[in-house]
Length: 231
Image 1 (cartoon, helix red, strand yellow):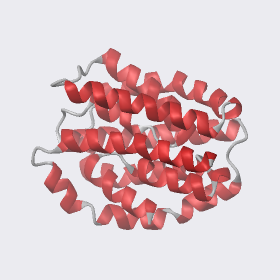
Image 2: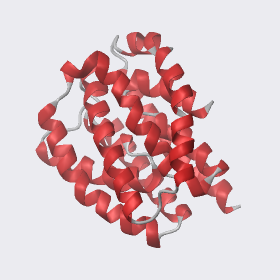
Image 3: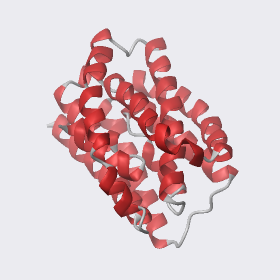
Image 4: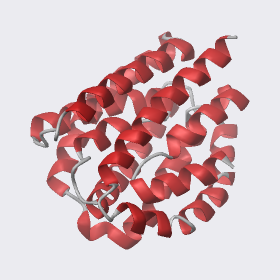
């Protein structure tokens, strides 16, 4: 159900699968995370790209991936040496600060520096927790809906594949995680198929509000998840 709802959100906004599904999966089966959610993160973008691939911002994508490479490397060290609770709270606080700052401004400059920086942060948060969408989405919050969804979709596909490789290299990708992720592709597909009305609604000028809302909820979800886990 969490993957189904997350796929609906991501199908409309461009990201959000991780914020809904990652906390639930972490509470139910922490040993399978973040590998299981990364399998789904890699597959869902293919459906978005099938419909909107022409709207990808290829230049921005290049900068984002450039920043993600060192970010993912740092995340590999974090996964091995930092507890799930600590890294979850850290990510949540960073996202909330970013949302607060961008919500007060009319726009966030979208250039090589900001996109590369967002990719770097996303590489850390996405690989370590399975939630890498908010940093990139915040930079693109003022773009049109199709461009946000298409660019994020291509970014998520490539970055999730990269994260899976890194998790395998550091010994944090058990076979059960891959199997669980494969099974979750079914509710993911169903969620995307019913997200069409949400896309049309948000494309009517409500994308920026949706992006900020989903990013903030992802941070709150992480905090709740880690507090419950610690208890």
